Amino acid sequence: MAKKLIGPFTQLLPLANMPLHGALADNTLEIIEKGGIIIEHNRIVDMGPYSILREKYGSTVAFADIDTPAVCVPGYIDCHTHIAFSGNRANDFALRNAGATYLEIAEAGGGIWSTVQHTRETSEEKLAAHIIERVDTLIKQGITTVEIKSGYGLSIEQEVKTLHAIQLAQKEVLVDLVPTCLAAHMKPRDFDGDATTYLEKMVAELFPILRQENLTNRIDAFVEKSAFNAIEIRPYLRSAKEQGFDITVHADQFTPSGSVIAIEFGAISADHLEASTEDEIHLLAKSDTVAVALPGASLGLGCSYTPARRLLDEGAILAIATDWNPGSAPMGQLMVQASILATAEKLSNAEVFSAITFRAARALNLSDRGQLKRGQLADFNIYTTSNYQNITYMQGTLLPQQVWKSGKLIYT
Ligand code: NIG
Ligand code: FE
Image (cartoon, rainbow, N blue to C red; front, side, top):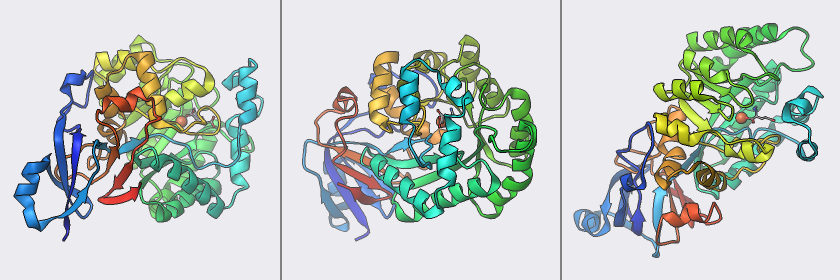
């Protein structure tokens, strides 16, 4: 029997029919009590009250009975990670806590560059093994789609190796990995030439390989003092856009400026935004560029949070992601971070769940996930609890009992 009826759930939260932009009060959350889902292969074909589904589909379905209490929500989407790395930056963490800043450590040769050196020494297979291990950690949290950036290779060969490692990892994991090329993470210290020459080389030599080998359709750039400035990055992003890549930008992390460029190039998302001022907030709010908050970086660096409340109140699309990386955000715990951001920024449950489901899907230009409705991928999490509010209340310590990806139970 190809169709399956899953349930009954004490509460089923479809997160469907909700606006992409702006603030959301909790009374906008649809809650189906005693709900069920009908899946066929990898998709949702129907959903609603369990008793009605049972009557409607009767003997044509197999049953996957769920012990109650149970709450069902869409699978989470971590739309910004850097988990293709080797090594550890615990010393950077200690140095920062002793008073050094992220930018000072980067200028002294630590920071991203130290991770580049470790990652370059790692074979493709070993790097894939690191990715798989980290993805497994994310799956246990209910994350069914994971974006992964390159950016610790910073040469043609090493960036390609990293993107190959992500492809290799994809063969071994049951969730979807979305690769992004972040060759514009910083100008590598061993590159003989200026930033513009480095970026031109990437356009001329790396972009064709990305296409030929189908490595990614996404180009990211870090616009910041320690990385690339507006003058350097514009031609790079222009080429990426002309070649049809989706663009995303590390913007306004320490100083404002990147989000203006992100909007100028119609970026899918502008991520970080801890240093965004009212000007950037207004621009983002008026645009369709998703504003991605990365509370893990604020926690890792001891910096301010992305002004998520202001962004939502002005009408922006807000997503939340882990930014999992060895430097600024070593934690890699999405619900922990999203719930902490909620307390700091006063976010409703509706805003938190939207930010890690359908709004995060938008940041990856994916329209087939993030909501529980007919036609969407059957990606969902089931918690042993009677009320969805317990999930953020427990600040990430309440973990899903079951994780389903594309119609398969992948973790229990
Ligand atoms: O998103 N901001 C730039 N990139 C990463 C940090 C990378 C690193 O420190 O290794 C970030 O925080
Ligand atoms: Fe990042």
